[in-house]
Length: 440
View 1 (cartoon, rainbow, N blue to C red):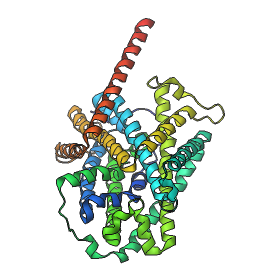
View 2 (tube, helix red, strand yellow):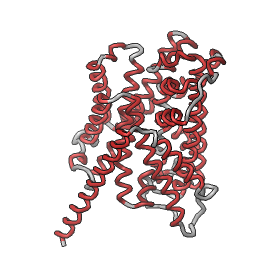
View 3 (cartoon, rainbow, N blue to C red):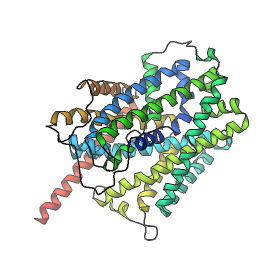
View 4 (cartoon, rainbow, N blue to C red):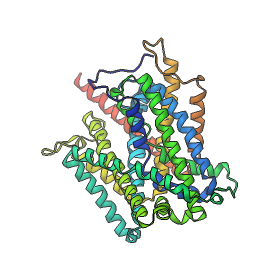
């Protein structure tokens, strides 16, 4: 198969450095401010094993992304990869699984994490009514910001990004001197079961690899930039995460579970005092707001495009007459995020979001095998995963193993979701076919 290409008239300006930083920025953030204590709750000091499991799996998945991404010069990321390999039905399912499961549920989880983090200073957020009002204000405010101007949304994300990575790095460096080695000793033996359950939740903190690859039409020399950018980006994220977990566990020890809502803030309080706690909570809140703002800026455009092309309800394609933004799509998306946020907690929503994106990743891994089989003599050299199908098969096994740790209700919910959207796809095809026959 020749590299997938379309004439999009987009300027290719994303190089290795830009792609690496984009992956680091979009991946390292919201989840890691909360997850260390939740992971340690079931594994203690052995929680570090879950990071190695997720790190190894994300590297295997990244290699598959690198192969299909280096052959794809069109924008669209995971949708383009899956649809190219398996056709429009698979692309339709991937699209909807991603924006609902991987985006709406992810946003709802992040919003809950934001409320939990700010609860450190505002205990009234424990009250269900005040929490619901807070979540309404967050989703409503970000929706209004993005409706009034796309420039406002972009500026807010840029501002939030500046306040995210530096505090985490400073915390690791300063907190290292407060680590007690006895807090890192393994006092309980981990099991395959609890490592699997913890890894499925932890994988939430690794989500985002696919985001920057959606700009395939703007990446320079994809056959070199994509694999190198993925390798460097994932490596930086993994090193940062492992360092954060070790420092958090090493400083807090058995008390880590007493700080489930804001473990990094507790470490900052020990390392820097009250102002350190305030700094980390501010950085965490800013990171989470930035992540939510970014999603509410970009994902509604997918709904808008789908409605424009007849795949979604027509009202979602409306553009505000004054602000020239897809206001109906933005309000609809933000409202869904709010509803799921008030109906579930961080851990539950993060697990579902991880499962949804893992299904998408599985589709990309299988696409790498399918596209390789369809490949004829390429017109230009592209990246090829070494070892034949060994890496994709290992990645497939890893993803299936993580998904096997879902509870029966969660598996049932995902199955129903796929069935419903399969029926929607079938009905849509039938309606279009009848419309085409009438025109004839």
